[in-house]
Image: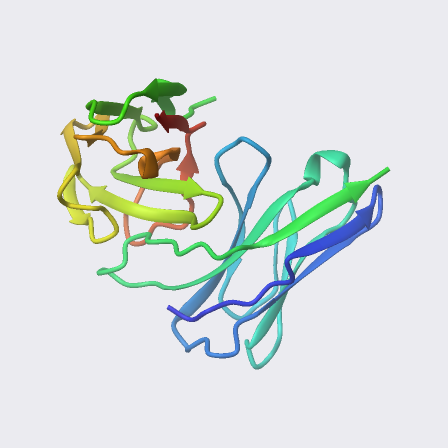
Length: 113
Length: 115
């Protein structure tokens, strides 16, 4: 699976959009981008995933560049409860890889009042 | 609201003792994962099961760790004998894999301290 690079930490003002970048320059055509987050002392939580089209759900939006070498997770109106470590993960979809996630160090997002 | 449950939530034990951690996946999920999280190594996948069969346990120290699924509602992770370096938070996650598993649901974790 392709490696990802994320900034170690970011701050965001409450109510503003939080834009979390992720570089995955070695991504291959059959690899998807997944985002999870981990709020302090809790298990990780799935946020969103995508292949090449932008995706949106009730939690966030995922913007993937046309060359797929980077992506951005957008939390449109960050709240204090969004303070967490955000993990960007790239993995292949295939029968031999039924769900294996390789977590990196992630980005610690601090939402400030 | 269906959740993954893990017991115990906290465990303190002495070096050399056996430790058993239990996980109840969400009803209907057919894939179960065990992860370990430490400050130094972050989140590491130890093992995972699909339809109760082990698919990959390459991340697990074989000499002291074992993972099993006695039935579809119970997954266990055992450490025997335990060592101080096993101190970590152990997470269980489950998901439903029909064609492909997109979302894993994580439990609250078991915080293990080996003295």
